[in-house]
Length: 305
Ligand SMILES: C[S@@+](CC[C@H](N)C(=O)[O-])C[C@H]1O[C@@H](n2cnc3c(N)ncnc32)[C@H](O)[C@@H]1O
Image (cartoon, rainbow, N blue to C red; front, side):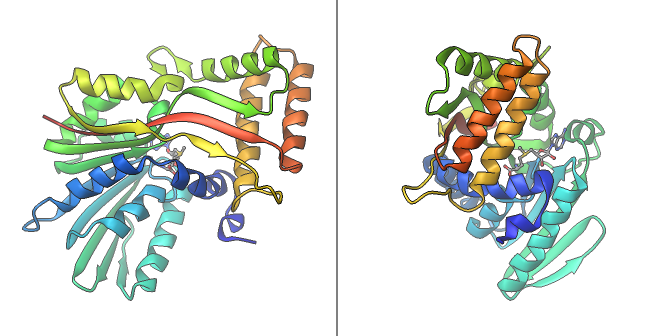
């Protein structure tokens, strides 16, 4: 049993998706982000805000790569279990590096040799958090990974713009962008219908989660932000020739199938029996190490003018 199998439900899905994200992340966009963060002067603390941080996938990548001696890093997530897992992992992360950890109800302060990391945690809805204007800081960087599809991007950016300093960085990664493909083909017409219904389920009045990658890019440009780097970060999950998937990715695939099935069952456009047959076929493909999954996504790094 690996670490992620010890966690349950959505938190396990987030842990299982880490290896998928690792392969997917656009390294040009990431490296420019890290280079920009590391170029920020050392005479004051570096302020970072991460929205929808989950169990800390991006958070730990940033801590591992940022050289600044004093970091104030605020994480906001709706789910207490995700923030709890992040805090737990932070303790191990710091202790493994010989760091000293002091825990408070809403903060974890880590001192590593010559480096101070002050992590402020909020279990909250990010919109409510930003609308409440409790935030007095102006951040150097705002991070959001696999989260923008859940929001009206125009409105979210309006709120985020208020707490980002001039010249500050937006790093938005794994923004879903309109392709969900399961291979090999099951039935061309049904496969297309499944994809269309799934994407349509991400649409609300002012939100179209299935187009979040291109929307964030266009919206940042409309606001006059400087797009420093943008590129694709597609998820590609393939079985190995010997059989099986990397890490806990079989679990990841099963969860993706369940997300899709839930939306299909809620739709009037496809019969229940067709959904059940599609699902059991795809599930069998996972068990036989035969399913390939592709989702198209975009990463964007921009600075506020
Ligand atoms: C798909 S997960 C991505 C987590 C993490 N960024 C990652 O890439 O592993 C989306 C995260 O956003 C959080 N979330 C969803 N809606 C939110 C909201 N309105 N405010 C704050 N967090 C939210 C969820 O609890 C979850 O942890």
